[in-house]
Length: 202
Ligand code: GAR
Image (cartoon, rainbow, N blue to C red; front, side, top):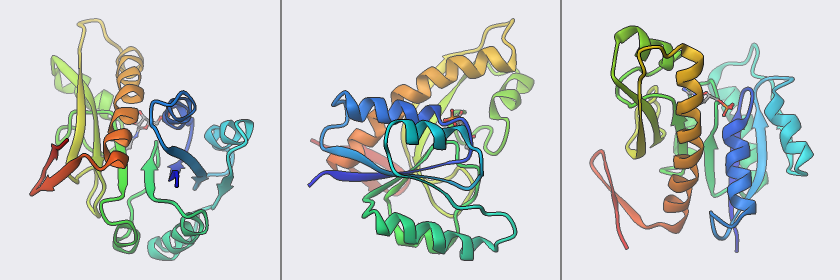
């Protein structure tokens, strides 16, 4: 049975597209993207899913209390028999209910070397801080912001003349690469979590 991925996004959807390309190219063996869900109407990522003939749903979050909203999302994920949830530019914190519904089965991609620069505009935070290396992180998701155990990270050197845009573009290329790799590792089950450490096994 194929492992079914559910993707949650709020906007552009380039990480979703990278995962979809990787699935199509066999870089994540035995996986399929079962459904893409957005909390925002008009998210370009939803149109991209439809173009690829992948089930796509908008579930507007406006005005709903966090857990009430998450119950709707979890119901749709369960309806599509999702094994692994991938947050791909999903700009919401998950409730404890959501996290407990998919224990160690939710991944997030974040555009910084966590624990540095969690939250919003991480690339700008990195530039303003003056770091020499930026990067991205794929981690398991818990109830805290950009927190759970780290699966993979990639570094990107910061250039003196970098703008938020140029740095974000270089980080994004690494995001697309390591998200595929991390999903493959997790779906193959070749890892164990010891404390905060994700250790690869064979
Ligand atoms: C990506 O850079 C992702 O790492 C970031 O939003 C962007 C979404 O782009 N996520 C976060 O900041 C989550 N805290 P995409 O929609 O093209 O994948």
